[in-house]
Length: 254
Image (tube, rainbow, N blue to C red; front, top):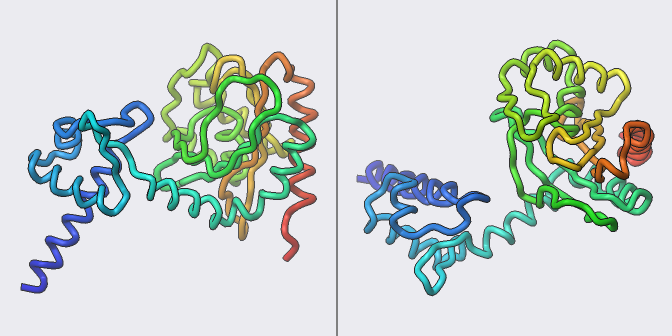
């Protein structure tokens, strides 16, 4: 009897997590029918779970009946960023880079398990700029300065094993979709200690990034982003050296 109750409890938790995972940047609002279909549950079951999750603050429901993620998730998400070891290590460096450059500064954590990047922290640009990834955004490890930086932080054999696994889909006309070309860019980034990209991830945007290590492991990257107009290639390299130096200056002493 106890084992049966335990199994039902675990199944309910799994279903609740499936419901949360059904929401995304492209689907921030879902009707009950859409939610039930997304998680493969009957509508009455999905409704019962949704009611409980609304009571606990993990979902909201608008007057039109659509469901949205709840405020409690925002509260927990902020704790993820604040408690992250990489966020602690990069806070002072990110503040200085924001002050010196006036540009967008991002701290991203890499998830090697599912080959993705997660934006943990951000400093907003003081200059006119295109929208960049918000805190909490997750995207596949592929191309762009942040992806190249974390790959460059690996030993050559580690990067060589991962690059062929990446889905190099074209985001812009300048996106690197050839694994051999990406591998060459990663090697060049490793040699100089920072990665650069111009128009690869987002049209009109350029950036530099430096890998962040904790206990000898690559855990993410610190990046500065600006428009391609403000960041021609010579300035990208100048800023790359700046990010590398600032991060080194503020690295915790063991």
